[in-house]
Every structure is written in structure tokens, then in C-alpha cells.
Image (cartoon, rainbow, N blue to C red):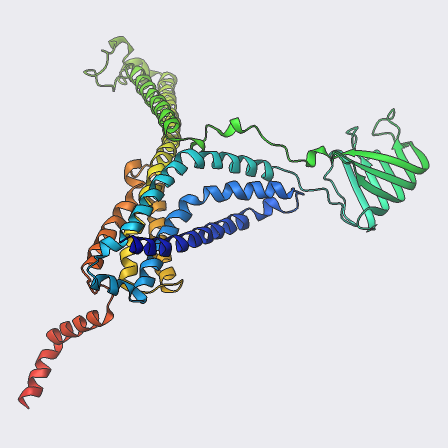
Length: 486
């Protein structure tokens, strides 16, 4: 049996590793296409991009791992069935359960590894990747002075060049508008040509200008002075230094993101969930007490539930001074309308507050259950993939790939629907997050039973014969009897 176990393990581990990294690569490419506009044109170093891709790929493991388990199990059992190895094993008296046992052991190790990854590695990966992506997205585009276009990327300066040569280091027809004084275009520098270089520390850009003129409007005259005198100074060579430190990637303190639900492990999620629940209950209690105090002063309030209303505070609409004084009646109606509007606005704002707090609490509850659903999904998809591969008896990346993608789409869509229902308050967290596993687990058990009993589940000839039998029973029985009589 050791040789059998070794054969099954070697047949399963290879496809699992390949499919896992293929799935991870596809998800990573999807991530790049989504944020390509935030990454291109900002002069990021290669190691910054590599760091972002490394941590982002770790965040895609919860999607890639179940898909790899499903696809590799179908491929392994399908290949063994296609090459009649399963038939040989069964002829030797080895059951399908015994054949699948090494794969079950590997899957159990994957379940434990997935749980450890979700609880310990995934929060750190989310923290590093999302904080780095946040810094990159707010990063300014890289220094890029284009010919014939006014460049405004440097604070308080507008630069225009007519032509660039020598790899962009030599500039011709240079105009520099200086807005550091905050008075508009009062300072202009022009030059026939010049050179541009960046200091080794990447903090300053140095432009050496040749054959130019400085134009400076006099600051002691008001803007309405029709003369608008200015000072003009020519030069043969001038050096201008610009601060470009704002183009460097500034890292935000990661402590700002640690309270996010994606960056917490199970114990931290439980602590945050308890705090949010107690705060939500406290706010609801305050809301109820506030309305009790308000309605205690209203005649319409239930006197059996609240304090007894002072009769002197009750207003009788039929008293003489209201009938005889329209002004007093208007004041009473206006006061009542103000009370109604105040209560309505307070109820509306409180409802929005409770809704926001409930959604926030639901996100922490979702993340708590996600730690367990990832591990259980590997078990469910293995129970579907291994017997399904034994039934279809096809290996490789053809039919197994199609079937596994369809099944994974069903799993992923139901998971997203359940998560959305939890966020909207339709379902509880323990219901919505487990709905996909609960729906697919009976399918896996059924397929396992059918595979171990050699049931022709996907034999199209069997279904064709049954359809023909039903057709003869419904409409062709009389025709056959007439043919026999003739």
C-alpha cells in the first residue's frame, strides 16, 4: 500500500502546485489591470512594485487555494481513471476510499495551513499591501516636462520648453514662471537653452540656463497701477534649483490602518466586535430613553407606560381663547409642527447612525467567519473534485478545467451573495458566510457516494435510454402496439 500512496501523492502534489500558482498569477494580473493607472507614470522603483505584488499575491491565497484543490483533485483522479489505473486498483480489491486516503491526508494539512495563514499571515499581508497601495495612489506623477506643454507638477512653478534633446537633458526655448510670492505671473525667466539634472539624493532638480532674461514686476506698486513697471535683467548663465522631494514615495504610518477589519486576527476581531456591539446597544438605549422623556410630555402618550401627564400641560383645542384668538391657535399649531419635525429628524439621523454602525459591525463579523470558511472550502471542494474526477475519467487541463471553473464560479458567486446579504442586514453573519459551503457540501457527499458505488452518474447513454423509455411510455406505446398487430 505504500507504493500506492506514493503514486497518488506524486500524482496529486504536482498538479496542485501548478494550478495554485497559475490561479495566483491570474488573480495578480487582474489586480494589475485594476490599478494600472495608479502605478504607471509615477517613477516608482522596481523594488516598490515587487513589494506590492508580493504582499498582494498573499492576499489572493483565499481564492487561489480552494480553486487549486478543486482543479488538482479532478485532474489527479481523472487522469488515473483515463489511464485505467482506477480499474486496476479496484480489480485488486482496493476501494476508491483507500485510493483517495493520501489525498485526504494532504487536504487535512492544507486545511490546517489555510487556517494558520488566514489568522496570522493574511492580516499582515493585507496591512502591508493596502497601506503601500494607499501611498502609491496618493503619490504624484513623476517629473515629466513635455515639449510645448506648460508643466505644473512642481509647486509654485510653471515650466515650458520648446524642444528637448540629448535624452531630455538639454532644453531649448525655456520659460519659467515663479509663483512663490503668490501674486500671479509677476516673475518670469526665459532662456535660449539650458541643461537639466537631478541631484544624487533625488531631492532637487538643477537647471543651468544660458543666454536668458529675468522679468520681475515691481512689488511696491498696486495691481491697478496702469504703468506696471518691471525690472529686466539679462544673464549669460544662471542656475535654478527646484525642490522635487514631493515626488518621493512617502510611507504612511501603518498604525493608522491596524484598526481595519482586514488587518486583525481572530482574537482581535472578537475584541473589536464586542466593543462595537456594546457601543451600538448603548446608542440604542440612549435613543429609546430620549424618546421616552419626550413623549412623557405629550398628551398622545400612553399614560400606562410612562409617567402621568400633568393636566395643566394638556391643550384643549376647543377652549375659548383659541377659538377667539387665531394668533394663539397659529402659535400652538406651529409649536406642534416644530416638535413633529424635530422628532422626525432625530429618528432619521438615528436610523442612519444605527445602520452605519450595524454595517461596520457586520464587516468584522464577516471577517471573523472568513477565517474558518477558507479552510472548510478546501474540504468541500475536495469532496467535489476527487469523486468527480473519478466519474468523468478525464485528465489534463481540458474538461477538468472547464468543470472546475464552473463549480468555482458557483462557489464564489454564492459566497459573494451571502457576504452581501450579511452587509445589508438580510442574514446573520453565521448564515451568509457559510451558505456556499452548506449548499455545496451535499453535492460533494453525493458525488463521493456515487463514485464509490460506481454509479454511472455522467454516462450519457444511460440518460438517453431513460429518456427514450419515458417517451415510449408517454406517446409511443400505442404506436408500437399497432405495429405489432399489423
